[in-house]
Length: 245
Image (cartoon, one colour):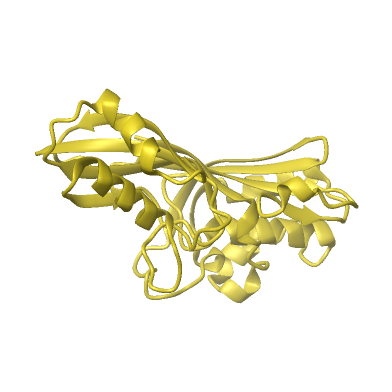
């Protein structure tokens, strides 16, 4: 038995997230189909994150145990033969049998893309949030530093049965920058709660619109109340950008 770490990238526009569901096609479903066509049986398949419907990934990692002699350098092209155009295998390598794609992760980085213009970009439909009102990226970058550090992020989490226990996370970096009409919000943390990035982005957009005060983020954290934060930004602009082990 071998444990293989597989790195993929995918366009999540037409997928109902990573995890297999009854009501729609998911990335895990098409990946497992490709893997079965390539190596037959497998077990203990673990994804590094629970990305939601419409969320994309520049880098998504999967650990899976297989009992097949295929060399790892041949596994990559073999998987790509069976994967749909929206998903591509980037790398395969053998790891220790006890390696877990999610639990061995030290940090993850997400990027949220906003097309900030008075005109839509048709090529970014489903791949960036269209926001027609002015954004001051310097102000938002300054405000975003209030997220950095170890905090209780209860106010920035959609509560459901998946989120129980400790809501403390350590945000290592939060950066807001502009490239022409594209505003990118990048955040890295040791872990993320359900919808945490999208709620942080929505809160910053609330600051941009004047609905939330620029100095409000620490006070929102103290309340530990989801209703105190901004809206949950649309999923189309969110990318899992990097996974660090």
